[in-house]
Length: 127
Image 1 (spheres, helix red, strand yellow):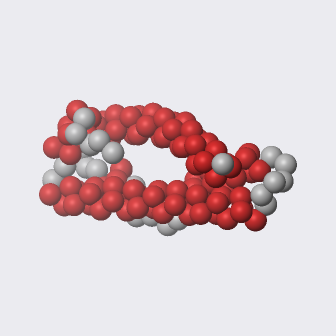
Image 2: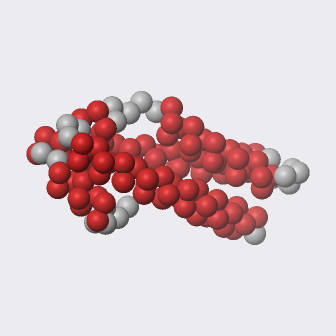
């Protein structure tokens, strides 16, 4: 996760020390939730694959299990309140909106990259 881009630096520089601490905590918390969800999704997909080898459409089912578990885990796992609720100025909320847009684009790219990665893992299991 590259947070050295202009949007992130501008936002970070607008925060006071308490807000910076809260921001860092939220970033780490959400990254850990995402990584754990991804790891568990791969494990459940792998388990399903080994329990159902040779069945029809195993490839698609493993991908669906992996993705659904990862995304479901992330969305359902309890999280700290959004950083937006800790912002106090219009400049901060405007900078946060820029980060939100960038993160949304990164999320779409991560879905595509993740899909391709799951394909690679599945093909390596089939060999």
